[in-house]
Length: 393
Image 1 (cartoon, rainbow, N blue to C red):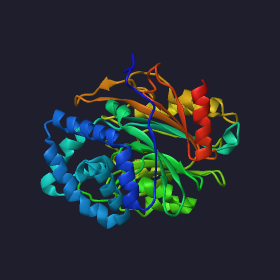
Image 2: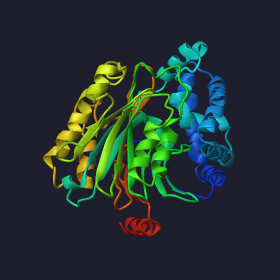
Image 3: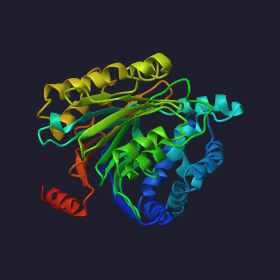
């Protein structure tokens, strides 16, 4: 049975210049940001890493963030101030992969060990172009697999900047962005990838890359947010543009970007291994054989459900595909399971996007019969209507 304390993800709105947005974010989401800190403290200490040492690594990473984008550093500083936590805590939430990737030879072994101390970050994502859906709307979604406790630290955040598109993102409290959509019709989902290049690097945190995608007005700018970034770790990002019904999948390493596209039916799915033929030749995939072997079938399971409904797909079909339990607990929808490093991981959330309508459907702990989807709207009037319907049920 599910933990009865599991609740819908809180919804917060922030606006204005970066530091003001950050302070507002920190104040509104303070309880969940403190929960994020608790999760990372326990995760590190469980494997023998003191939080003070983790904070030291985060402090050393701060100048790199400021150099790469001072706006984001100002927002992160504001989040810390508003929530009443150390700056280093918010940096860890935004840059855990980059902090623990071993930037200096002396830190390499400790960084590898710290990275191994975190739960394997899985995720399964999928997309259908408009020609594959009943509404003609591009649809996109994913499961986020990570520390099971993050069901208590994730939020849905609306960002109203001084200029540029407004953003709706599902994210860990304190993070700049994870997956989401914007008012320019851009959407992004993301999956973990790992390769031999992922250590001894400094680069832009994935949360910043994803925020830049969601700040983009055009498809080209969204792609460029990935391809032009100074990257420290590997990752997979599916970027879409509803105006023109276009999408691209970018398998990234610190050195290269490999592109994939939806098939002739307009469908695409991805798990946690490199699919690009070029990447399979050039890159040594370090996750699929040991850390997440279920990646080799999760994307196929999702694609089979979507393919059977191609041409008439709905949001509910995405929810069904992402709820697949084949080979549980190592399934598309993963119940809490303790890994060899002592961490309990699960599918923290299922999120499905209708970017044309500006909607995110999000369900915490989707493995549980005691949870349900909540719909979050980028348009304030639509959110009010959704709230009224929910209250009447």
